[in-house]
Length: 407
Image (cartoon, rainbow, N blue to C red; front, top):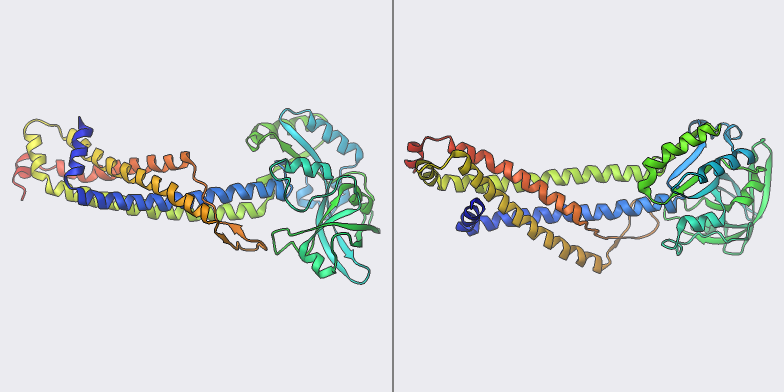
């Protein structure tokens, strides 16, 4: 009954209600489109970190590696025995999909006449394929199985060095014992890293070639891929416990801790979204308060009449609260419909732009999630109830005589 009366009151002044509904709808539209874009960016950045940066879900190292590993790499190196212990122990944990030994590499690359620095890592071709899976198998920068001398280099570095696919070169680096070593290599593929900061120095080596270059039979870390990213909180403590029981003092970090770019971009976008949300909520709630204040001012005598015939103040307050919620709910539903329509239009338009520090174009995609939109609708409805309550409370504080005599 109250909802029916409140709906009639909303329709009583259609023009004012429509203006408020439109303001809420536009605010909801803006909020949803930004949230949809941020959702897509977060998903792409997550996949880029896990697959593109080859971080997997968890990285297992000797304790202290992340703080002192560059100063004393030999101390934190996993020799063949330690590597076998770690990989065997990790594989025994339920939920582990892939265990991949890695080796960070850096040094000089030479084409016979000039030299240039390179920085990268080493991974086996089979592990790289397993990490990418079927979804990302098409990505460039693939190591060739069975070709232990084939190296993937950055597009800009290839241009600087005058190298192309099939070209021969020499890699030079210091071994763990401090000696200078060199190995011959062949350019297996030239790939754009997507980042201007790394494309001129990136090299991805087969693990066997990197071990030959460094005079090592081990790795400096082990990357673990799980069945899903949601398994991390459950699997991580189990891994630590089992490795400790096996006698290995391990330190484990999640992919989000190691991907600096993801952390920085997500922090920036979270702050932007918070600012946009505050502005939208303030505009929407101001419209609701203004509408309800005007409605209450016009219906003060009506409020006095209702109280005179015995209606309780709380019942009258609830009528106005329901009116505010109806207005915001309808506006949010309209905004949701507009969000789906405009979001689909943006996606079909295939708009691209150049992100900061990127050497490639990125697609502007809106990824709308119903759960997120429903959360926004619920939040706005609750705030509308609060915003409508205070004007109604002020109106019901008048005496019945004062309300009936209001002009």
